[in-house]
Image (cartoon, rainbow, N blue to C red):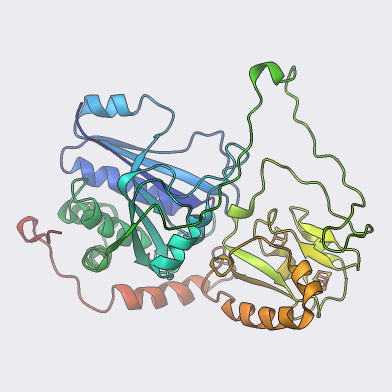
Length: 405
Ligand code: SF4
Ligand code: SF4
């Protein structure tokens, strides 16, 4: 059997769908330039996309047709040479509907494989987010704000070619920079994108992540029912209605926490999370009413606590809250657990107030779920490109002049 290469692209549903498609398609086209057959595909269609939900695309490339055929005779790759995470907060893990529980971002990586992340964070911060792996792997950071766009608009900030340019250095056997630049010329017809790929090739570096590094927590999982435990017909158990429960923080009843799906928690769907300033809350109920995921627990004192295991980070609560800076969406990368904010506020109101002030300073001005007003594209994209590619004119790259790693 020849050599088989598998690349997975982990992306946020809807917002990064086109980015993932562009990446997997270009990988295969560049490999074709070198006589390697390949195929790109999205995860099977029973994984419907929802805003922000972690989703996957794959690119499979082989040294020959037979190896490709053999490699494709499975549902999706069991192990990969490269994992690309196009939002750094995906390093906290991936929950794709209620299939598996939480999957570490590095779960499928082969020993010595490479995890490529688009981020403004330093490698240490990303390593701390990712779960520990039993063998070493490499981490490469393509510097940049995670690229989000809407359903109909593609944010062409060159994230696609910067990742691909980095790949030509990190996995040189897969395709060369020259092959990539041929594809860029044919597909995108933009010499500035070719320059972005070259810059990324030149700048990318890796750190090795050892088994002793990373998040030591065991990802949550659940048992699938055995065939003899399944009920007749299509029966999906509903979530039981909650009621007054004894509050863990106060030991009192009178609050209200709705029951939630134990096998689909949703928190890895978010790239931002709401921070609630309880001192500003006027108990208007709007967040509780409007949250599409019923995340708000009514606490015994009538406050509304966003449950961080259930919150998908949509930002509706921030949008509907009538009080200034009462609910603020903050970059998810700033948080290290899903603990209750209300608990923290009750235990230490002054400390919590200082924490809120410090934390909302990380309010992302450049991180959003795509474009929400006319002109936002023009505001964001030229600014990002100016630091990456437009600083120098594109130099031509000939086959024999292609830089080698
Ligand atoms: S961001 Fe707010 S409205 Fe959206 S799911 Fe989370 S708590 Fe609910
Ligand atoms: S929308 Fe704002 S003010 Fe109203 S209950 Fe929620 S947090 Fe309090």
